Amino acid sequence: MVKANTRGSGTTRRIEPQRLTYLNITLGEFIQMAYGVKRHQVQGEDWITAPAANRYDIVAKAAAPASEQALQRMLAPLLDERFHLKIHRETRVMPVYVLVQGKNGAKLKEGDGGNTWVSPDPAGGARPRTQFGARPNRSTGRRPRR
Image (cartoon, rainbow, N blue to C red; front, side, top):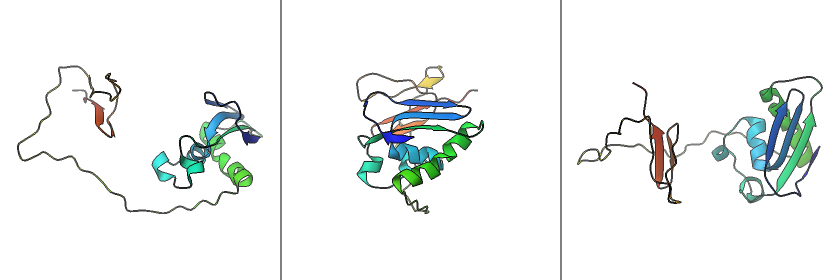
């Protein structure tokens, strides 16, 4: 069953051996799951990719127990049937950024001995992370174990 979400509150992602229940999910998120791609790899109209895009509910049952990955792959034909999607895969040249040391040396400081370091959250706090990540105006990461 695929239908437009009318609740408009909270998302649900539940996978059981024979059943998928996804509630309040954008079409772009369904495409990511069905085709095993990341958010930045999905291009399309705003109604597909925007965070405020229309949201849908999918409740589907498989004929036999299947793995999470197999159930998610079963989404592709369901999306094609319901939304008449035309999927096109291509390789694109994308910009890459390299972090290099400036001519006056590194400005990074040695950590205090803890495993996690953080940079300030634009919202005013600091949020510990367990892996390296970068967003505009913020980088976070975890110091390698010795």
